[in-house]
Image (cartoon, rainbow, N blue to C red; front, side, top):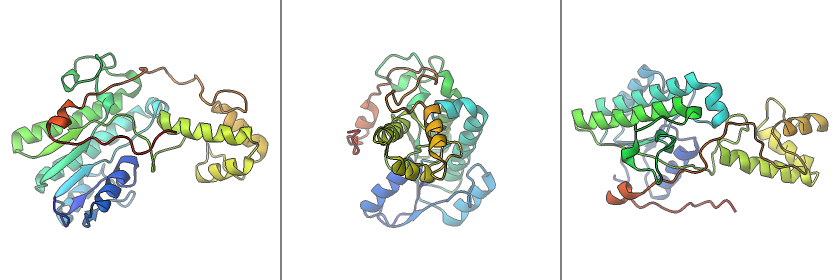
Length: 273
């Protein structure tokens, strides 16, 4: 890519998209374009087509998606499969139609079968049942991968798919009702420490920024402690409860494929401690 190439990053305000934007900007790329929601709804094919026709991006980093943890996936399965199918289908097809030079599709390690051997390899895809708790999301992500593959096969496009493992960092979703495990743990540990120190002012500041089930910093002490207790946040108890379905203990992926393509995988930039 040239420094002045027109680069489109759908999902630029999310965890992955915002990290991609920061990296591109720090490397001197100056012609970045976005489709902020709700001004643009990537589930709407006509809006996506109009955007591509007007802007004609040269490169696309497809980081837009509806994401969430076990609870969100279990509560909104239809939305997870529909929204992610529509986003991927619209962006990938428009990228072909308007001659995008290269597209990078961000997938997820949940595409692999629940009981696949570890470390996970590309050839394990579609060899067994998926993890039930996020199957709708996984199916949509698999469809996006296959779209890229078959567009490359039929139309000679240059669309790549990469599967990140669990991610966390700036721009993450810390909503205890919908977040992934790591951001939920980070926030629960913070709130538990504040509670242990009887620092209700810091808890109120947290709730003002990210209310829990409508409870914000204006609530009385008893209401705040009650909502924290509902999410297993106690002064002397564990900050992590047992109410969500159990998942696989770990998922280990290989980096053989990206290494063979000359891609350098950087170590995590934000340590957990």
